[in-house]
Length: 87
View (cartoon, one colour):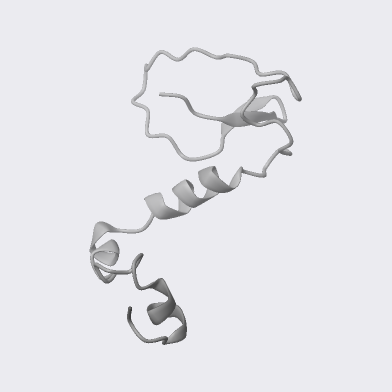
């Protein structure tokens, strides 16, 4: 697995909480700022790319809440958002 974060005040801080057991071995790869191919190119410390931010938010939503969404939500999005007639 790959986790992303930044060095702040001399400490490595990950973008999201990671439940690693005590004694877990880790490997650190330094990604220079602005290096081509770096996932974080253009981001500033403390700012997550949109897909990472959404994943962080969605991870905190319990499955029971996801189960409440209509099964046809993606097909009938305009109906649920704006009350348009179903197609």
